[in-house]
Structure formats: structure tokens, C-alpha cells
Length: 128
Image 1 (tube, helix red, strand yellow):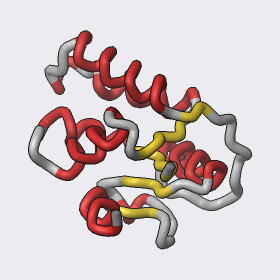
Image 2 (image 1 turned 120 degrees about the horizontal axis):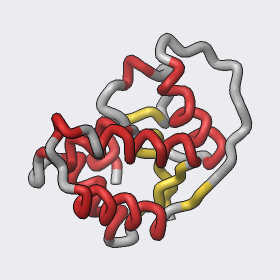
Image 3 (image 1 turned 60 degrees about the horizontal axis):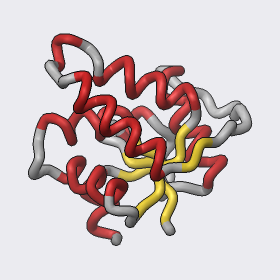
């Protein structure tokens, strides 16, 4: 099964649009077609961001999706990497992806090193 790390912006987009590529990515997780890798920092960011009142997502909706990701996924403790990041909050996703040998799916490729395993939702789906 293919391992992936999902950037938070993909989850936010999946909640906003039920017909976009991020929602399709989430569907692949929920139906067991891909396996998300995460660590405690990633789960904490998911919960923090998705629970922001201005986004308007219900607690039940957020809890359900996060529980499904945890149930379907692989929890890891990645090794720290020395790769420089303009925004240190992105480092955790990259470290988890490298540790798992996973694709990193993001809406902000420019925040990560330019590598073939750092992809947009559209590029990921096209390659499946």
C-alpha cells in the first residue's frame, strides 16, 4: 500500500470542497487505498487548524476525520533532518515523509524542497 503524508492545507481543502482533488485524497485514505503517515506534531496541527472557529467545521466532523486518519494510518517518530525551511512548521511533514518513504501531498510545494516525492493533490491523483 502506498504511504503518504498529507499537509494540513489538503485536509482544509477537503473539508471546503467535496468535489475537489483534496477530497478525493481523503477518500482514498478512508477507503484504504493509501495509508497516511503522521506523528504527534502533525496530528496536533491537524486538530488545531481544523478546529479554528473561523473555518466553521463542526467538532464531530473534525473528530471523525482525524479518528479515521489515525485508524487507517501509521504513527511514526521520524528522525530530525537538517534541511533548511523558511517556515519551520512545515518541517514535520517533510521529516515524516522522508522517514516513511512516502509521498508528501501539499497545496504549497514552494514550502518544501523541490523533489519528486513532494506533489500536489492533482499530480498525485494523475500518477495513481
